[in-house]
View 1 (cartoon, rainbow, N blue to C red):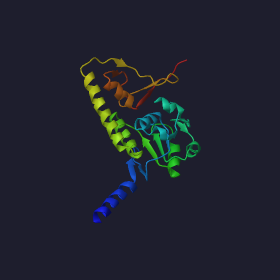
View 2 (view 1 turned 30 degrees about the horizontal axis):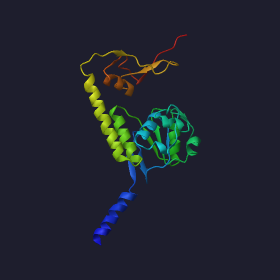
View 3 (view 1 turned 45 degrees about the vertical axis):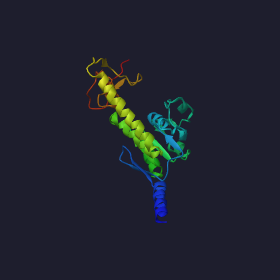
View 4 (view 1 turned 90 degrees about the vertical axis):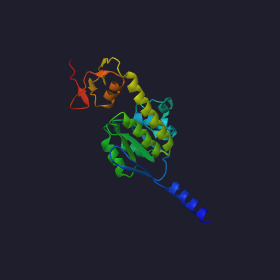
Length: 217
């Protein structure tokens, strides 16, 4: 009888325990259960959710969420820089995932003030990508898958560094846009990826992650 009661208590704790994750903004996200409906406000988070096997739970996303192909069928609410609060609320999401760098800070703050759980991601390093997929895995109820993907990514990253070690370093200019010409320095995530691939960023240092260049008529 005591043994059966102990098993029941253990089962109860496992079933009803809250899901808790601290996002990159320092906010504690608490869910009573894995979310059934998710709104993704960033293409890269949409991709990570699909890799975790939770892509079918994404009810709405933003422009440029084009991978995998199934993501193209998800309704769009705007882009990573502009989404209305009303459009998100209409989806009645259990979880919202967003990108910190995007210009949606006001939207995120409003959604949080209305009680919606918003997971904000901002990987400052390539290793942070592994941490992000692991956090998302916990939130969507797939912690084992999240841990597996995080380990695979870290192994692949180290292997890539070793493969490029000792090889020549071609000089690279990474153009972000042709509408207003700008690039990134070596501290930016893209700049780190350039370095890992064995290339040399021609704009390695700057006071800002992004470097703008004036356009001439």
